[in-house]
Image 1 (cartoon, rainbow, N blue to C red):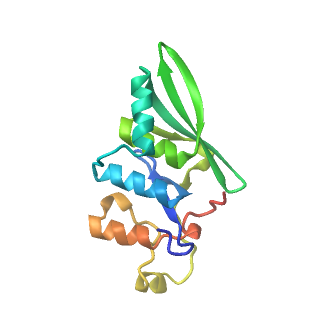
Image 2 (tube, rainbow, N blue to C red):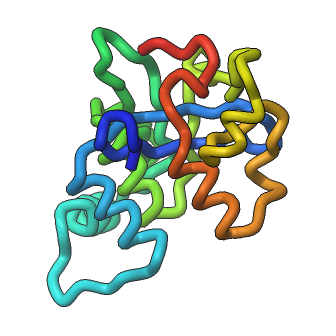
Image 3 (tube, rainbow, N blue to C red):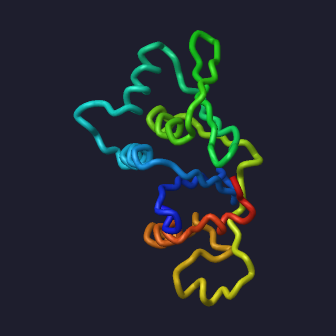
Length: 165
C-alpha cells in the first residue's frame, strides 16, 4: 500500500540490478498477486486462475509478460502466448499480466525507459531516518523480511527519482 495515495503499488526489481519499476494497481489485482505469492488455494478459480486454465487448455504457453509503456498515467503490457510455434501478443493491464505470469511461472520484462533507480533527494537524511523512510544507498536485497516490509511501506513516488508516469 502506498501510504501517500492509499493505493496499491507493485514494485518490480531488475534481476541482478538496482533499477525498479513501480506500478500502481487496483485492490483486486493486488489481492490476486499476493494470494499467488503466498500459495493461497481457492475452492473455485478466480479470474487469473481461469486465464491460466484457458491458456493451458488451448495448448498454449505464456512465454513472457512485457510491460511496454506508460501513457497518461496508464501502464500498458502484453502477454506473449505461444501456440504451435506462433506467438501472439495480447494487450493486457500489467497487473493482470503479472498475476497470470506468477501462476504460469513466466518471466516479466519491462521497457528500459520505465526502469528507475530509487534515489532520495539530498535533504536532511536524519529526519528521513527518524520517520523510517528509505534512504539512498539502501539495498532492499540485503534487508531481512521485517526491514524490507518497513522499507516498502514507506516508499513514496518521489523516492523513485525522476520517475513520472
